[in-house]
Image 1 (tube, helix red, strand yellow):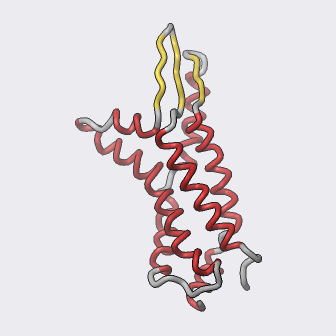
Image 2: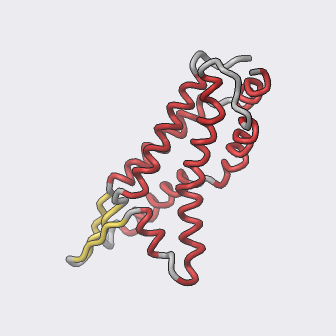
Image 3: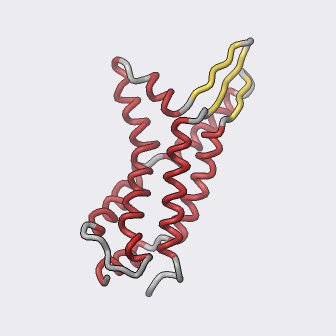
Length: 166
């Protein structure tokens, strides 16, 4: 069973889109909290760096790894695996290893979980302070949609078969 026409190319396009959204979401303001005349804007990178001193450094590493680095790595590995297949060429040399990593790291890539947890927290603090959502928050929301669309085109069995036959 071969994929829908252009499915590999769709996955590659969604992966590029996801990488761009993720990179933008790292540095743009995620949210702004204002209460009693004081306000503070923060980005994902800024929050992780705020925890980078002392005994909280592993937390900063975990935040950046699971929310940012792993999803970007998974997108890049999917592009590496599917780019030649989408263009009718044989798979690259380590495509099977790259795709295996994509599958193995899926439970650890937590961008979707992060945005859901953030939304719950924002509802809880909404009565205590004024919260303004920044472009990075919306980039993460769009990223969830892009990931869902990408997943709708990914068939592990089809990709494994294409890697083995091409």
